[in-house]
Image (tube, rainbow, N blue to C red):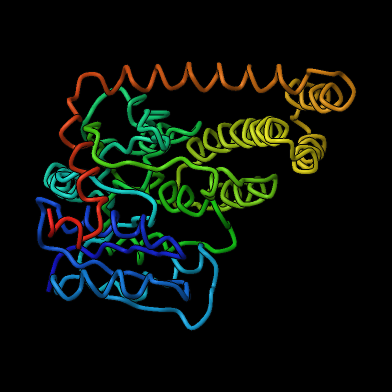
Length: 357
């Protein structure tokens, strides 16, 4: 039996899925199985996977009878994990060749750790780096509670594209909580880091694709509900020291406020005023909305009545993202990822084209 299960949920992205699977099969760590869970795509997805499976017995395919939604497709996939370790890979993301080698090596430094993370780079369609969460961490190595969880907050948690988990984590902290919704990945990581060590290696090891059709790009104000539930669960977990729970609660409350502000601004930028209004209303319903609540209200009003206000907001948001991208690129500068990026480009070609070449 292989030691690592790589869970690849997918829905109607056969071209991107091809790259994702190829990036797993090209790993220097070979002792793995690829479990593709098709959310009833009804397109060429099955034939894409079948071509890989015909050449590599490590590829397995499960097609849902109906579309059960993204979060449930991820969560139910865990029922099929039989290996000591598992990892998640979205169909539009991809791995550098040494990703799992780096992650599995991390467990040797901390046998009681339940997750080992390498660095995932958020990149746009042009190949530009937009964000690198682990680039904001101070060092590689083992992190123990409470530092392990506090480092994850404020949007700095490891992107699970390049994280390997021990299967025993499912028994110790539970699986993915569907009630949390879209941020269930963050919830799962926080529940682990609140009580157990984690391992971090800041070596760039994967790519998270930022595009208009991604779940992240379509976030709305409802994400705050999942984050609030996440906070309430951690606050009620008496296995976590009271002082740590208090610190987590304060930090998550701040993170929720800023997430709602971000949703409002991004909605205004793309012209979705209804989503912006909903985010503003969520901020108004909070006792701690403060300056962010007032700012949201002013921005919504300005975009409604002042000509050119939305264009100025778009320019300001572009400038903010550009500054964040520069900081991310600076943290990656110590690593030479050119060969990894060329490799990803080469495996993006269809198998037939690669064979002919």
